[in-house]
Length: 324
Image 1 (cartoon, rainbow, N blue to C red):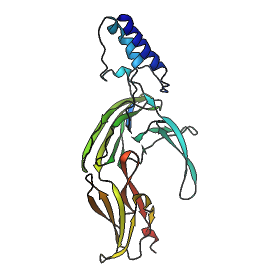
Image 2: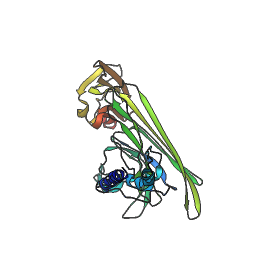
Image 3: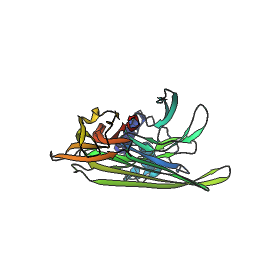
Image 4: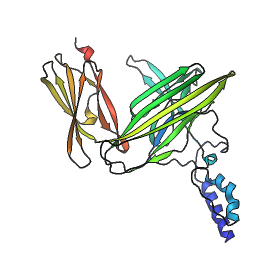
């Protein structure tokens, strides 16, 4: 019986050694000292970073003595890190100028990011704070706190899920940045619920603090990351009305959500817009919602369906300044 157990363990260890995992391994027993919480990465699948081989090596004596081992997720020293890669992309401004933008991405992992890392320009060596978010994040709020010997960030955003479509679990994985600038995530918790109607809201807030010493000056860093997941009925058609000062309809245009123009030129007599969203409820019933946008608004928005039944706010610029 003992030989059989040892054979099973060896087979498991062999499989672990040939999984092709490309994680950057560190000393798993080393604590996360002074690493800053900078956000969250929401994945559609569980990101398994548990060092099963190391756990077996440390607990093999229990099996040899006829005992049993249990993995319950509380053994943090065996939780590895998945590191992000700093990539560059060329951005062209409206004036035709080109510049390079840098951002961290978790390559090969499908998900939605919302984090604020410090970027070190590999060319100039300059550092600056950046806010990185996927278009699956709506209602993004980003605030930087700076004071005497203290600083921090506050990040807040919402992921809208089509009602009745949440058949998969979403996993909220905390994202950290170490003193040497490396960005990584740890395996997070999952949320799942099927067949939810519109209006359900679930919020997860992560808070953390760290002490950072640089040139003998200690700074306290705090972070608050608030992520909400809300269910909403998907939009099937958008109707945009231009209205005059006497509340008469000037024009009415209907679009599929993916066909709404990025820029809208108002009529000279237009005073405000009404955006009419035609939706379908979880039970198949039709629903209409209306929003008003005045001359105080430089854009109008609507919800557009993306990948994995995620809906996100899409904006169209209102060219009020062209009414001359």
